[in-house]
Length: 324
Length: 277
Image 1 (cartoon, each protein chain N blue to C red):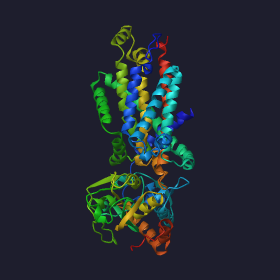
Image 2 (image 1 turned 120 degrees about the vertical axis):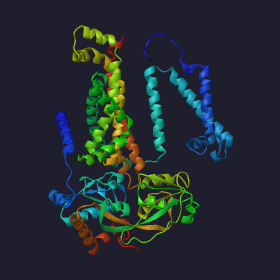
Image 3 (image 1 turned 180 degrees about the vertical axis):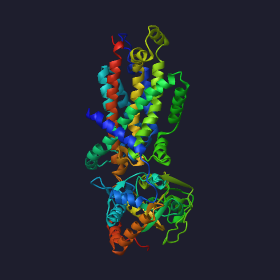
Image 4 (image 1 turned 90 degrees about the vertical axis):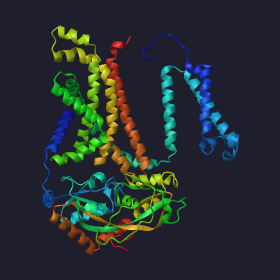
């Protein structure tokens, strides 16, 4: 909720029209899908007989059961307190995902065997490539934002050209351009620095815009008041503008960090042995790449969750003024 | 503090990497001898030629050949694994010295690379799904065919293949596909083929060993007809260093003469691919 208050309102998932509509929608969806040939059909065997021969009756029975279970589940969750609701929905979605992965018949021993190497080589490389890029990108972003807000034509022109160019090219192309293009100018750059450079420049451009808009979101009166008190540019920025701009800047910046973590997989094309590269490579000989791709997906997800948690901690810190 | 010093070290290495000037052409052999190491580029996704083994190290036929060449040159071998398109783009700029990754010495590639030695020949074949209705290669006329991008398999499917290396047997185009789909590696193409005959692909052009490997791993595919062409495969170096080229040619010739190469081929493929049948 935006701001928790004490106004009581009816729970929407308990309103009859909502339940009816939801039930009808689910029923229609699963009627359209023929699930008689799946595990669901097998489970319903006692009711519908041989799933293959059950025809429309089988389809309807399956869709009806699913709709009833779904609606019952939603209505029951509606009774729970907020925290419990969140926990249950998370758990249920997670179980659905696991069931989805289960259908791939993955070889768990193979995953267990490869996981240590994926972490010591892949996750470590991914993390340090992203971490360095994040630091450099943030530095570029602050410089870029100040340049874009300055009245110096030179600085403004460079900053706008930079953000336009690096936001306008696909990151993969930037990786290629830097890795293959710089040697033409006489700078032979290794794969890891090339990847870091591409990530920093690209994300620096996006974050420049975030920082600029955050700074501009502060009312000009703040700036004028501060200046009229005799504060200089640096002091105004440090003590007045930035502390107010940070709560605006942090959520999109957190987004950028998470997205950079995953975009670091693009540097695998130039042969950096990070998580994505290993995911594509390790299972290749034995044709068990699905195992490796899913393990890597989970590792990326876990890393992203850590970043999400850090972001929400920081947001809490800056939202103190809004707490009653 | 430790983290900080690590960061500065990395920042410094970044700056260093930016400042290094490339070695002059013709000096590759000097560089290799001075460093005592031969930097070999190879694909990590091309079993059984080169792949990651159980110990998470590079292994395979190409890798063994590269190691043997290094041994005969008296240097140790270091592997790097850039993408195939980056290797074939040329302009290695001293990042690696040699490519041992089953490259076919086509005329176009010969403009950028020298090929010191052909070290084996792979039969290229066409794979179809087990349920496929095609019984001969000409049944694939007007169908959707997949192949690894910028490979000779793709060139064959596009009827645009030039094999002009010494000893390359003649071939003819057996079918004319409607669409040729490009994949970053053969595994992805097989993955699309396994979905069913004609779901995403009707056939995949790939090397016979890869097709056999996929079959062994339980892919529901089979080889259609005879191999469509024999691909000579060579070690590649950048143009401009004849001494380095001669050194590698000597090493490979030595391996051919004393039977090492045939032994390696039998070890990885079960048959001797180093001579044309």
